Amino acid sequence: MSGGCESVAADLTIPKRSMRATLAMGVGEWFFALFLFAGYYKADPRLAFIQRHIDLTLLFLILSFLMFYYRLLKRSFALKIPISFVKIAVFFLFLAACLFGGLLISQSISYGLDKALRFVAVTGWAFFGTAFLITDFQSLRRFSWAVVTVSTVMAIDALLNYPGVGKVSFVAALGSNYIALARACGLGLLTSLVFLLPTERRLLAKLSLWIMAVLQAGGALSAGARGPVLALVVSLLVFFALSVRGFPYLKVDRFSWKLGVVLFIAMVIIGTVGQEIFSTLFFRTQILMTYLGESVEVRLNLYQEALRLWASSPIFGSGTGGFAIAVTGSALVREYPHNIILELGAETGLLGVLFFAAMIYIAFSIGFVRFKNSNWLGRVTARYLLVSGSFTLLNAMVSGDINDNRALFTWLGLLAAANRFGNGEMKSWETDKIDSLE
Image 1 (tube, rainbow, N blue to C red):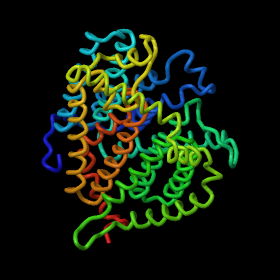
Image 2 (cartoon, one colour):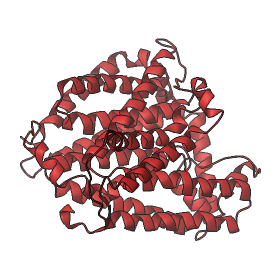
Image 3 (cartoon, rainbow, N blue to C red):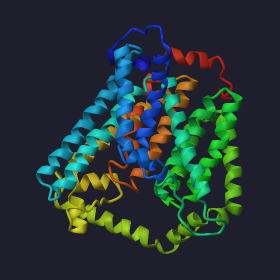
Image 4 (cartoon, rainbow, N blue to C red):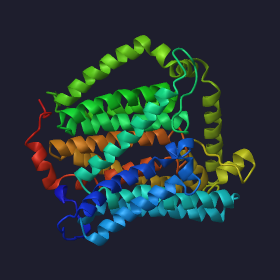
């Protein structure tokens, strides 16, 4: 592989593709994306006819795994797992071992076991599925189109549920909550702006992406969730920071200049009319800046409780699921600190935190090395993975438990295998590089 990356590889010959094989090559990434975001739409009453018979998360997990298995049986691709991914996978398994080991000291065995099993089966596939299904640059593009499609559908449904100008009310979509809407639209917006638009050459597709981006931005801002919007702003700042190269003569690629101008105009418009159109977000932000508000106070109390539990058992924590019983007094209630570091510290101790931190460090290090040492398209791809990885990590610091944040583990897997999104397939793109550095 490029960049001196070693691989543990099972090289399979590529036969002549049949129509069925071509279809299998295309839908696997879509099934994987639908699995990843199933929690955002499976509560929609319009999907109850499916959900009554089989959980949609489980359905698309099975379908995406079967697509991987079908490809493997048909010997229709070369499966090369980068050694860098294997290194991070080892820490993932150590983290899983911490969660199961935590059951030995947990006072909430039922909830703790459910949490550990979900981490291995659901979050595990969200992580390992990247290595088995998203195997090259075109595969990453198919997955990215699936991400922006899901987020756009959610944005459209949110628009239909919009309460009206000036009204303070949370907005949700497809039966999910307002945080899920903001997260999905934020990730879809970053995917549209940071990856698909700069690499897309078809005019109609570019126009469609701009329309999707407008809808996604509207969905993220109208939801009323502050954490995902803050994560979106910080991630865009990361994007522009990575777009600047060279010292003392700074260079910025042409697309980043254009995007910067568009976002500046958007900020002016939002600053002018946003208080009426996105009234919930503005109202809750004003509360945060004045007296914090009940939501923030609850989170701070949860943080303090998590720190107290961690301090009581720094190395091993209170056991998987232990935070919930410490806070609620019930072994049946699902509760978590809304911060993945504090959650792991409180329940798995320093061991779990170190294994998770090692995954973060290695994944982002691989992404930065790929970004610094690649050609133009390689830099665009690595920059996207770093930016979207930052978005999922920031969200995990303010909302959800470890399994709610399985998208973070997906992007850690993509960053770990960043070196596979390159090689010969990018050369044809280099000849048509209309967004090269100026």
